Length: 424
Ligand SMILES: *Cc1c(COP(=O)(O)O)cnc(C)c1O
Picture 1 (cartoon, rainbow, N blue to C red):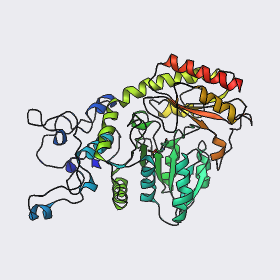
Picture 2: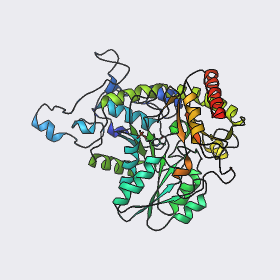
Picture 3: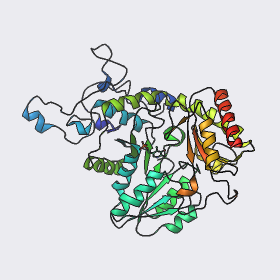
Picture 4: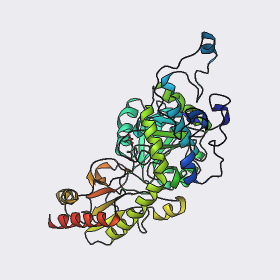
């Protein structure tokens, strides 16, 4: 947990000048310097000065005497107290994420993306409240609403991700929060976040956005109207398929609520994982550029194949939400889905099994390409799938997470998959 404001920078006196970044730096530059405060990395010329905040493993922080213990700041960000409040490695990661998120007063870290979603919703919802949820939300988020939240007396209502009027119609006096996910996990519809946020603000509804797909580089969530922006750091920030983590960032008032709720739940992340996430963050910009370009070329190629009914990729003209993506986003990522024209789940599985370069498994955002089966119809509550302009039999698809491999090799691999689908 950490904050950027100057009153929260921990141990007084150390020079922050070079790494306490000015606000006008562009994102690629911020990715390099974010979180590398001199108080955490040392002062060049003095012993121990390094580029990266070291892995600071500690449950117990020691005080010189009882007076110092009594004088400590037990619950201020960026101050040593006890391991559950973190140490410089976690503070540096939170600080870096805050620096990348325009409008954020602070960032809370969680042991997974799902924990971040739960942490955000529990910070703003109470028994008797109603949560509105976009109908294209990530499956574990839906399950949280149907289980944990329902058991706490919080009711969830789903609405059409592409219809702000449906959101307005679903809103009521008891609605206290809305969960958006744009683009949605499997079907990738983009939501009109500014319009939805304006409707929510009029009604006093807190907007929680799962911004994992775009991240702050492609979609500055708080500037676009979200009140709390959540990310699964497991995906692009980690970037190497070797850690689980989540984050939630907000302006001052809601940041304090997030922080208090996370503390009450005892949430903490390990310094080793925070260090890996910081390492991933440094290269996130170039990885995103590369995988976005490859994904777009493959999506365009797949859209022209007769075997494919629909490519679900907001970066592709003609896809659901493309116009909103063009209006609101400054980039994308390598995650998209496609739906096959007819056939069944067995043919789809033949496609998956014929691929040699795509790992078969859940998650995305790593350096390696992945494929997983998609059957969106099974997940919808408030909207139809297939979409009204698709044939009823166009149901079975795959989600592709494009990695850093050579685009031509990936395309040849997808050709093999399509041939197996056609032969099935
Ligand atoms: C993966 C994912 C999550 C959950 O993140 P974990 O780190 O796996 O818990 C949440 N939202 C979206 C959109 C995701 O893809």
